[in-house]
Image (tube, rainbow, N blue to C red; front, side):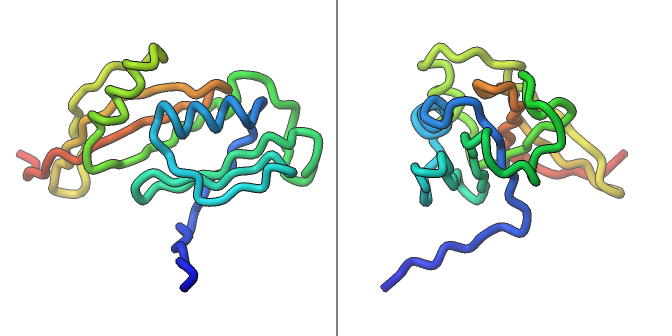
Length: 144
């Protein structure tokens, strides 16, 4: 029986400068799972919990997907929020690896209509400068 993976409706594809180093970072440090890959195309589809991303190291091909020259840090002006049931395992793995955090874990609340949604999260940049925000839901409360 073939396992049919459910694909999210929005899946970012990140251009990376070194597919092997990026795969090591995303899988060994952050804990993503390789769902499938095309090594000959320097491509991998990754998941962590319900989050999905693609990484693409084929910087010479696919010009229709390029909007300009890639210069580090890649992805300026965007960050990716990844909600997990618990952020501690990822945080501990990052600390153990010696990889620097962009910002330490903190609690924050944002308003959605008449409710406040609580999150605990931190920021880390990958090898190419993509900004990743790992979050954990910590509760809801009414706006006072």
